[in-house]
Length: 289
Image 1 (cartoon, rainbow, N blue to C red):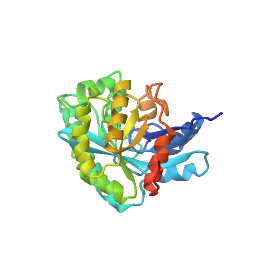
Image 2: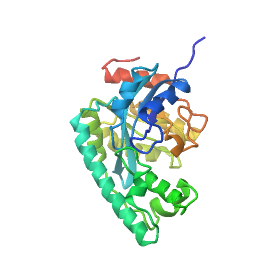
Image 3: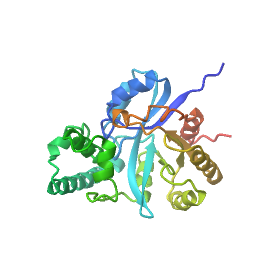
Image 4: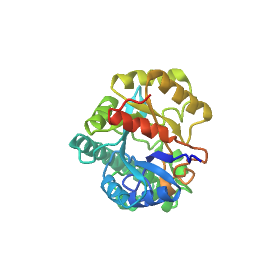
């Protein structure tokens, strides 16, 4: 009897806004029966050394990754890099600038919250930020602890998401540069969760992919925790039409997003191991039928 191997190619750790350390993430991945897992923290690769070292003692394939926030057509677009070299200065230098910009945005956001009467400090936020990539989820958790909101979701809805009075946009790396530095670091670049907050039309997908393909994007996530069946079908069919690779994952953040489980997302996620086989084949220059 052939047993289907389970994989998850989009997860986060305490190096950014997840609740599991890189080692704990791997332990959890093994416990739920995953054959492979990719760590793709936001704008940082600081967790990858621990991730790769810990994986040497575990029966699982650990894929070093990154998730970079970009903007295209005035919309936030995330690019996931898989099989990146964590020692690459092509990645480390621009990511350091991204984190610096993020820190400056956080400072302004906290000041704006203070002016409105929210008693929150940088130290309050740092309590929840165990890694070097600090963002709005950490500010949200600090606001919840202070008693201003009942949940992280409500803090985002009232204070932190786009369109609220306190929202401050941050600077992004251009998509073309994000793809380029992932390639320079030996990785492959994928458009992460391309449709989960859209109505799922092909025209939207093709418009963005026209530009991303021009800049060398390797593929898209065709399986994602928040995709509807229709969105998944459209993502995968458009990728096939355009000759793009497929990836997929849960976008697991541990206890920071308790409705999303490692490997299975909201309960029905399944990322075929075939996706990973084709990704590795392209990276290694092997043609598959």
